[in-house]
Image (cartoon, rainbow over all chains, first blue to last red; front, side, top):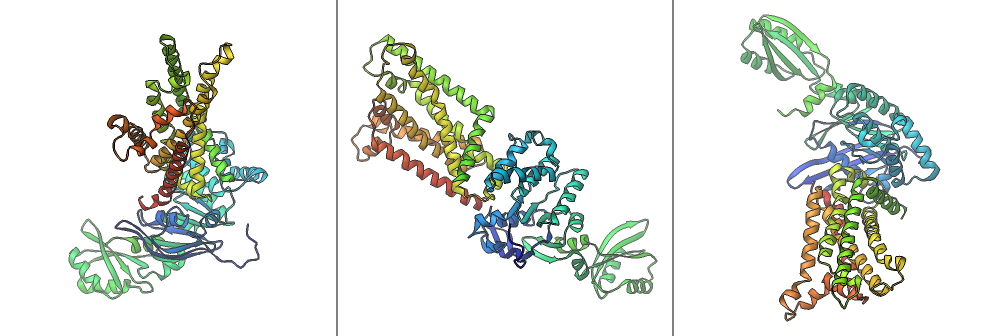
Length: 320
Length: 250
C-alpha cells in the first residue's frame, strides 16, 4: 500500500506505555520498537501484560500514559488510520458463530474498506492462503478450533495490512494444527511485519528474528534470540552430582566466584544433584571440581549445558 | 457513511438469519391480532364513542406486550458482542465508534418497524375485504403509527444503552424493562396524585399513555416529537461514551 521508495521506518514504536486497572498496574512503562519487515516474538508468562499491551497497540484500550505509534501514526490521535495498518488476531479468536466463512470474511473486508472487485480478489486470496477453500460455505460454529484460527487469521489478512499482530495464535491447537499455523506465519513473515505474542519458547525461537520479553508489565529484554542467549548473565547452567550434605554443599558452592545461584534438584541413591547457574563467559567447572576435591566429596558427574532461550526466559521471569 | 450501511445491513440480516427474529415477529403479530380482535369485539358489544385505532391501542394488553418488545430486540446488541469477544474485532477495525452505535441502532429500528407491518395490514382489512368505511380516520391511524415510531426510537436507544453496560443479555434485558416500566409509570403519577403539585406538567410531558391518547385521535403533538427524538439522541450519546470508555473497566 505504501510506496517502496520510502526509507524503512519503525513499524511499531512503543514509548513508556503504561496501563493501570484501578490499583493493578498491568503494563509499567513498556518501551520497545519493531522495524519494518521484522518478525518479533512477544514473550512472557501468562498474565505478564502481553494482551494488554497488544490491546493498547490495536486501539482497543487507551493507555493510562505513554504513547504507541504504528508506522508513525499515533494510536490515540490517528486511531482509525493506525488501525488500518494492522491485521489483528485476538487471543480468543472471536467470530460470529451464525455466519458462513465467506460471508464473515466479506463483512470484515467491507468494514476494513474493501469493495467490489478488490474485495473478491482479496477474499479468494486469503481463502486460498489460509486453506479455507473447502469450508468457505460452512457455518463458523461447525468448524474445528484449527479452522476457526485460520478464519481469524484470514480476517487479519483480508485488507493486506503491512503489520500483523497475532495474540497466541497456536493456543489450544493440536500438534498438527500448530505446525500448519506456524508454517503459515513463517510464510507471512516474508512479506509482513509480525508481532507474535506467545508463551511457547520453541515457537518464538523457530519463527522470530527478534524477541521482546515482558513480565509483570515490564519489558525485560529486547534482542535477537542468539544475542539474548549470549549476553544473558546467567547464560550457563552446570549440573553436578556429588555425595555430600545438601545444605552444606549448596552453601559452599554458592560462595564461589561467578556463581549466581545453586539449585538443589534431587537426591538419587545417595547422590545429590545440583544445578549451578553461572555468569556467561566463565567456566566454573574446574573450580567446582577443585572444591569437590578439597571438601572430599565424591564427584560423579559435572556437565555444562549450553544456554537456551528457555534458560534466559526462566532466569528473567521466575518469581524467586 | 458506507461503514454505517455495512454495519446496518449485517445487523439487520442478523435478525432474520436466526430463529430469534422470527420468534419475536410471531409473538408480536399474535399479540397485535389479539388486541385487534379484542377491540372489534368491544365495539360490537357496546357502542364506544372512539375509533377502532384508539381502542386497539388502549386495550389492556397493549402496554403489556409493547414494552416487552424492546428488551427482546435490544438486549443482544452490544452485550452479545462483548460476551463473545467480537466487540474487540469491531472496535479494532478501522471504523468509528459512532458508526457502530448508529448502525446497530438503525438496524434495530428497521426491524422494529417491520414488526408493525402486520398490525398495519390488519387495519387495511376493512377497505380490502368490505365496502364499509373503516371504523377510524386516516389521521388517527397515521397519528398512532407515528407515535409508535417515536416511542420506538427512544425505547430502542434506552435498550442499546442498557446492552452496552454489560456482557449479559439477561441483565441488559432486565435493565431495559425496568427503565421502560419506570418511564411508563412516571407518566401515571398525575393520574394517581392529581395535578396539584408544581412538577405535574413535567410528568404530563413525558407520559407515553397521554401521548398515545392524543396521537391515536390524530392530534400530532410537536412537544412529544421533540421529547422522544432528543431523549433518543441523548441515550445514543451515552451508549457511544460507554463503548469508548468501557476500556476502563475490563
